[in-house]
Image 1 (cartoon, rainbow, N blue to C red):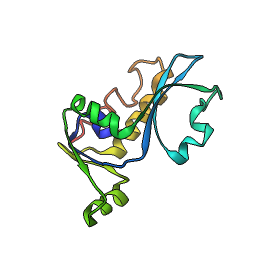
Image 2 (cartoon, rainbow, N blue to C red):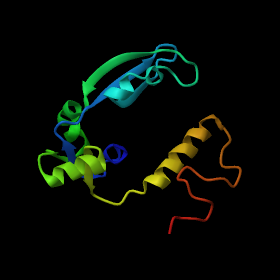
Image 3 (cartoon, rainbow, N blue to C red):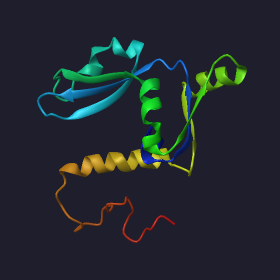
Length: 148
């Protein structure tokens, strides 16, 4: 789903019986919304519906089947949508191997590096210091390192 949000997915492939719900949850104390994707088993776990830091119960703003949401929003991400069934050997392998959702990318995405960058950006949110030190700049490169 990270690749979909980046616009990197050219063909989105989804199992027709994908049993995941998409929730939009709101923290009533901060007004902040967050999106989570949960299986039926995960829905029974109340920790997904509470804020990790404060323990505040999160309000369910929206709940929708993931397959329905994808069918309604895939064009927003500029991709084509293909449904697969598990009634063939290939379809069964896709469901077991990819969990029922996958895609063919337009370009290579380094998810490990993306996760590290997002983690560093999240950690730097409270840092009001400008580029006065030699730490990473806004693009995640060291001074003089242009990613080549």
